[in-house]
Length: 173
Image (tube, rainbow, N blue to C red):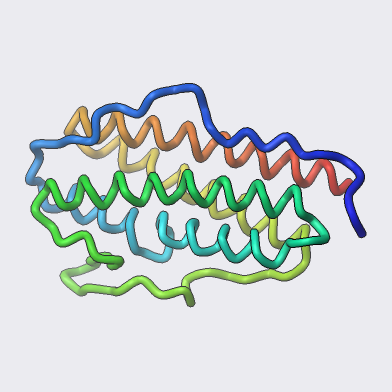
C-alpha cells in the first residue's frame, strides 16, 4: 500500500541549543549523562532504531522513511551533546552506562524491532515518551543549571518527535 499524501516532516525546531558546557563533577549526574548515551533508554537506541526504521520502510512508506532518517540525525545530535557532557564531567563517553558500579555496554538488543507499520510507529512513540519522562526526572534532580537547560531543550525535540509520530498514526487511519 503506497500512501497518497506527502508527510510534512519538519524535524527541526527553530530554537537554539544552550551552550554544551558544564563545570560539574557530580558523579551521579555524569552517570545520568552516560545513561542518556548508552543505556537501554538512550539516544544510541533512538539513533539505531530510527535508522533501521528508515531502511525497512522504503519504498512503500518513503515519506515515513525519510522522516525517521531526519529524526535519527536529531537524535545523533543529542547523543553528541550527552557524550560531550559526560566527557566534560570526567567520564569516558563510550556507548555504555554505569548502574550500581557495573558497566553495561550498549547493545542493539536493547531495541525492539516491530515490522508492521503501526507497531513500528507506536514503538517509536513509546520510546520518545520514555525519554521525555527520563529527561524530565533528570531535570528535576540535577542541580547544575547548564545541564538542566540542555535537558529542557532536548525534551522539546523529543516532544516534537511525539507530535510527528502522532501525525504518522493519524495518516494511517
